Image (cartoon, rainbow, N blue to C red; front, top):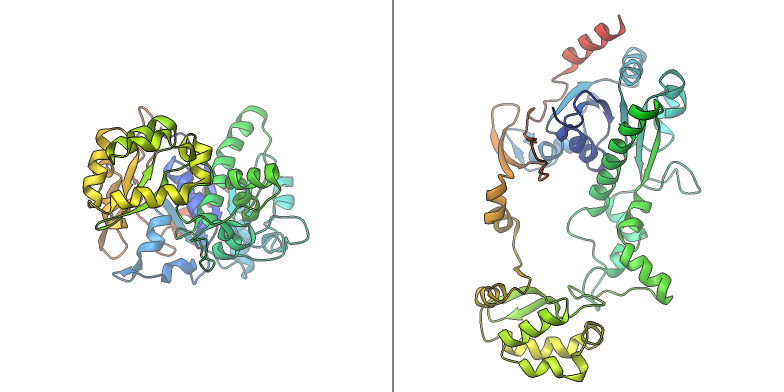
Amino acid sequence: MLPLAGIKVVEFCQIAAGPFAGMLLADMGADVIKIESPDGDGMRSWPPLSGGYSENFASLNRNKRSVVLDLKNEHDLARARELCLQSDVVLENFRPSVLPRLGLGYAELSKLAPKLIYCSISAYGQQGPRAREGGFDVTLQAVAGVMSVTGESDGAPVKCGVPVADFAAGLYAAYSVAAMVRRVEKEGIGGHIDVPMLGVMLGIAALQVSEYFGSGKDPKKLGSAHPRNAPYQAFRCSDGHFVLAAGNNDLFRRTCEVVGKPDLVNDPRFLTSLLRAQNQEELREILEIEFMKQPAERWLAMMRDCGVPCAPINTYSQALADEQVAHYGWVQPIDLPGGHQTSTFKSPIQISGLQFDIYRQPPALGEHTREVMTELSAGGA
């Protein structure tokens, strides 16, 4: 039995943050019923398309069932409401006023289902002066300060290459739902979980936020460097770049020995992590003179041999081909509707005695409508 087996989740979500949260819950065994409009989740049209089916959509919607309901239709709306009342969790990422206006908000549903866990993901939260504003990953990265610390110091604003606001919000949502399942089991009381993406982004920026609180100064862009550690960044070598993270005195000593510069250990500019961070441009220039003499593969081998954390700067094809990925079996085949087979990255979590497999392929639009509606009628009998 997976940890969330027996928990029924109704998902009113599109694109990334909400569907990712739903998939995490489904991976843990929850029966996630994805409610889609007749047009479907907008991500269904995102390329690449394999046999007409979106690989992006497949990556966030495995282990779910798809039900098509037109919430503008009174009959379908009534079925959606009944489905919510027969479920343990409602997960949604509309703007705060949308579902309440349809009678599907927490306040109304909880009167009839006090154990209901209702999780809302939105740009700015369910309350406050900005609650009605929408947002996407890039706007949240901007308003929450992430873009102010991303990129090279003299470069234009750039976002993180991975949509971190969407996926961090999904993680917070899934974690909160799982915690609330425990409370319902113990106390029989549900609740409304409010996941504001703005708050999530400030929450995961704990180091930058605390730096501002402690110094009164805004953190700055440092490229791949670190404000309190050095050498701790990407370095040029003869055939490109590699990353080195010598984050303490012992690792710095080993690094100096590998590059043939043991005298740097006692250089007054580099005696402590703080001093090395304060003088990291000088340190980078000194080290790169040596690094430019050999290719990345050679430096990585020597650093690994002496226990210094380091890494190549992989493309995704290279990252997915890593021997550690193969060891855990994280890349798995899946079948898409229409018969096309592709690959996906399954849950990376390991829990002793449990297997987090792909037990339900990504659904065709409305594939499970009849099945779920039959169950709904049986449950309401």
